Amino acid sequence: MVMKPDVVYRAYQSIEQNHAKVIYMSPQGTTLNQQMIEKLSKESHLIILCGHYEGMDQRVIDKIVDEEISIGDYVLTGGEIPAMVLMDSVSRYVEGVLKKESICEESFSTGLLEYPQYTRPEVFEGIGVPEVLLSGHHEKIEKWRKDKSMEVTKKKRPDLLES
Ligand code: 4FN
Image (cartoon, rainbow, N blue to C red; front, side, top):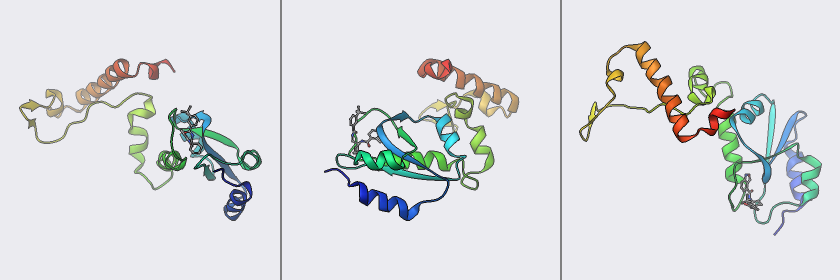
């Protein structure tokens, strides 16, 4: 079953905005990354289109779509979850969604993975928390976190360090 172009086009016209960027979620698209998300967050309007069943008539795609984006290489039953992934990741940059600090403080904005996190209790199943975190020495803690971020990234995702 292929989604009909006239039906999709009418849905599009009913929400059309002058400066909306139209994105089609598709396995044929460019794979989504944080850089693309940050760029999209600067658009004034986004319209996210996605397929289900066997996809969509190509003519309506050619007529209205500005950019095709994929969230990765696996088979899905529909593009709704990819559309939600895009919404979630872009909305973090929208004013008022998060507190300002949490956007840039995040390790991913440095391009690195996050350092390990700990909370109470101080000892869990006989396992303690790294000593430095209990010291209250803020500069040492900061350095420990930076070093750990780098160490974890080198070990688990060396590809992130290439760019
Ligand atoms: N998927 C592949 C090759 C051929 C088809 C598919 C597939 C949902 C409407 C598209 C999938 C994955 C990431 C949208 C997959 C995405 C979709 C996405 C998606 C039903 C037609 C379909 C080679 C990638 C495995 C089904 C590869 N990001 N077709 O899944 O919409 O956005």
